[in-house]
Length: 355
Ligand code: RI2
Image (cartoon, rainbow, N blue to C red; front, side):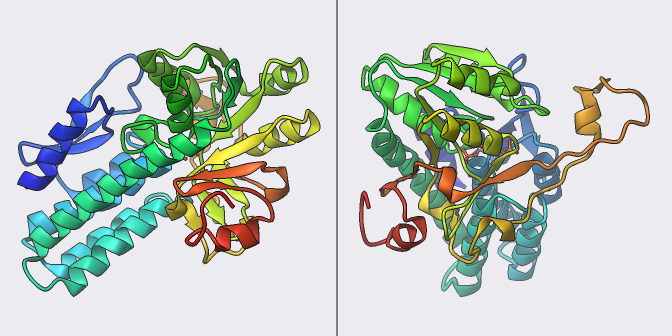
């Protein structure tokens, strides 16, 4: 446990906002449902509790739930003293929580494969692997932030959707906010329009909270204002996160993203997604093969438990939508910015930078 606890201490000293960490041999996470009003830290005692925390959105964002794969499988290893069957079951439980974000599946598979092939002590081997995954994800944020910031000009207003930031990632800025944070740290005078993101309000509750922490000027809009803002020249660029990118560059991201991309195309505004190579799913040929998580309709008919529609109203909540690659100007990754033709250039991702 020493290695993984030291990692959290180091990260805190580097002014990172951690979504999840180990402390005093206990897994802890910041309850994102209570933000921005309360910074409530929860202790997670079992893999079942972690699964429930992911399902309930207490911890969310594709990067952060990817980290849950590393922390969770290590927790199972630690508690079972390295029982590979229990580790595998814990991995299956985690993978069943949220189907769209591919990072979670990949980190779980990487951790379980490490357990299966471990030569020495399984618990120690998995601790090292978890630390490696967490460090790698953080490094991706710094790198993609650097590449993405090259696209941002002094004076730009950037629109983002949902929360693709530090607490949805490994602590620097997640995906979209790594680009924005890096541009701000370079001294560029930027302004951010954050969409509130119905129904869970991640944009209003968490993006605005982080932008305030980073000292980045911002304006909150409701999702249905984005077309007006684009059409009246208020937005220069759009940068959103990504839960999964298929092999041809189609993008699964928080529901509403597609509608923003359509309006961006109509208004000639560059539309980027910030991601990491781990979120590109080469096993999924195109967006129509991505499973879109359907959440409980109560999350639409109520806001924080307060009913906003008549009793008995039926509602629909697809958590994500698919933006086709033809609406995307570039995919920002830790290896560079990928542009069309996406299928070909994503395929070369591992060989070339800035294709
Ligand atoms: P990164 C969120 O989903 C949104 O789709 C958001 O864009 C993304 O995850 C952030 O993750 P949810 O977990 O792209 O709030 O930054 O449903 O990894």
